[in-house]
Image (cartoon, rainbow, N blue to C red; front, side, top):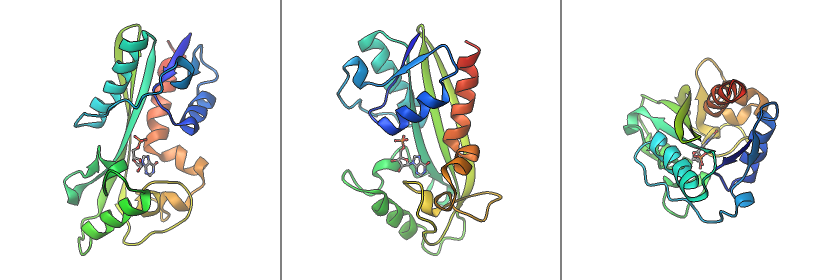
Length: 192
Ligand code: IMP
């Protein structure tokens, strides 16, 4: 059965195709169904945004689909950057700008607790399901490590002395927000 992943990110698509290869589902990307537009993310929560993207594809293309949304929530910043993680430093910005803004806003702040959260929203035969993965940790005071992407150089998961940017992808996936959400999602699909 075809199942569309509502993303334009081909790396994410390949990763999930590998993870779900032992299920009855044939995972397709947006390009394969002729959807080239950016789907607006207008929600106030990760769950809303994930559902908005999945509902958009389901309604317009009438096909089973899922989407994901991820954010970094920092307690001392009242949960920011949260849903704005990708564009925290402005509409046109990169990961470096976002990290600089976080470090600036946490300058002299002692409470550095934070978490990464991923929500996957699935619409299967008109029914909606969500799967959440969370990893708790702290924000370091300087960048550590070169691997990964986004906020990885400043996020240290609880119980580890390394940031995500100092871990191999395999190590990160075992404990990460995305890894946990995907595990729940794939277990559900395998039983569907
Ligand atoms: P998305 O919903 O997966 O596109 O993620 C939104 C933003 O959150 C990205 O642009 C990154 O800045 C950040 N982000 C998501 N996942 C990770 C991660 O695993 N490590 C570091 N930053 C991440």
